[in-house]
Image (cartoon, rainbow over all chains, first blue to last red; front, side, top):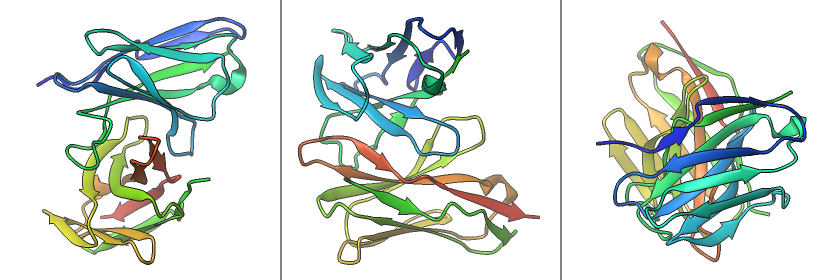
Length: 116
Length: 112
């Protein structure tokens, strides 16, 4: 059974560039969330999408945007990259937005973004 | 501001001992709590979830929740070197924002 898949696994970008990260949820999961994890910290919530609609947004600048497609896969876009955007970007899927415990949020392996 | 607090550690225990990891949270609206294990350079792996007061056991792991004290813990019995990792506590609030709020994690080292 395939888990959450993310691509690419690693990425190096230059300051000011744009990046697109991709995520495919577990089959049957309709909710996708994005988190940013910098070294030594816990993941920080960026976005949640459910049924192609944004249902939650964390404290991130407008340079960050996302969308969810009809097949429930998702993209995270970051414009005008800064050095501080270097982090592990994690995608998590769950069965619903009220998934209080049934299965929890399952994370993909992440995309390691380095901005130079 | 919803916060989840954890001791960053490191916590060192000998092989075979009980490791006790603790977490407090500020949001009384939090409904569910999760423990994730994260090996260095890897993504978080869900190991336990709990949403009722009391204990929940799964193999060598026991999660404990006390909503009155806003306290969550994870006990690992018969600790093994393979348990050496960072353990992340996360709270989930269904009230208006369906996000996980994570602590910074506690680094556990199990000494053979």
